[in-house]
Length: 422
Ligand code: GDP
Ligand code: IMO
Ligand code: MG
Image (tube, rainbow, N blue to C red; front, top):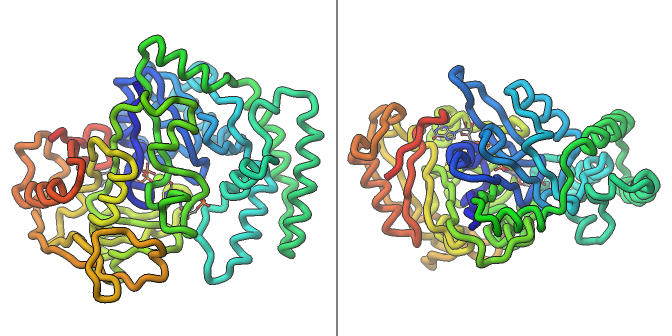
């Protein structure tokens, strides 16, 4: 069976840490969507060394599992090559434990330039993209122009590349945008030589043969449900489907194969980039969350916007994903707060609703809150559920009562062992 770990909010919920925690129980860990816009943070070894993964699945540090970059991902060979060097320092040899689906679309240097040009043209309405070329690469996939990893192995690749590059250049010129991509192109061609030395496979047969042999697969999501291209806060979203349904077309597995859907949510909310965020705290409390939680983007270093837990958005994500268990991360970040709030409903034009509206941007959403006492205890050293402060238990019980799935784990620090099963 395939279990899934994915984000229930606006990304950066701590998926990387949670995938690394669960990976020991799986034979294969597979990314099914997104690209190097993702930044998944892991702490490894006795020295707790920090590592941020953008393209490689977070199961890569477990000897017992192999990893797959699925066809639903968009892959930047340059990022992959850099990451290969980073993980090699930890003794990981990607030639042994990484497999790449041949149908995976490539991010070209001109996709990155196009991303910049498109974002710049939006002026005040810019998305806040990570500018990694994600949108343009997915546009070339659905526009039936893109180049795929499997194409690298054919001798006419360079000709196809030049043809697509010319198409892109016309678009870039239309934007009146100029970017010298000479260095990016040099890096790209160097990186594809490296990529060709890795295990390029037919992903759908690879994964289904594993499943047929009774192997356990863990699918790792990137971004979060509120950034989903269909169900997120459009147009302030990413360019892929981020929900559990995307596992099927991002890996080539049938829906009946999906078993557990483990949703990761912070104990509060964050968002990086533009777009609606009903519970955002543009004040000292938000600043306290940002400081205590070190809320700065793992990919771009940008400060993350912070706010209270939003049960309307979280229940929406539970519904869309069919979440069977929730992992609540960063509970320790709330340790020092005197009082906490949870949004239980929205008031839109004076009408109370528990539903996420069509156009969050244009609706004047007033979050309705329930207040909670803070626990004012250092929770980061707690190892057992029985040791959790009672105010935290009240907080979790309330969340459980209001969602279709329950909190099964609490993460109480960034470290590998800072996780408590409830
Ligand atoms: P991802 O994109 O979902 O993998 O999340 P990121 O790595 O972008 O951001 C999560 C951040 O929170 C990282 O810096 C993690 O090391 C950190 N983190 C994860 N879980 C916890 C936790 O329970 N407590 C604290 N304090 N930090 C955590
Ligand atoms: P992980 O996997 C948080 C956001 C960007 C921007 C919008 C579109 O680490 O949780 P894109 O680069 O896709 O064109 O950006 O989506 N975004 C993320 N925010 N975590 C991520 O990934 C994100 N990936 C994209 O900030 O607002
Ligand atoms: Mg991240």
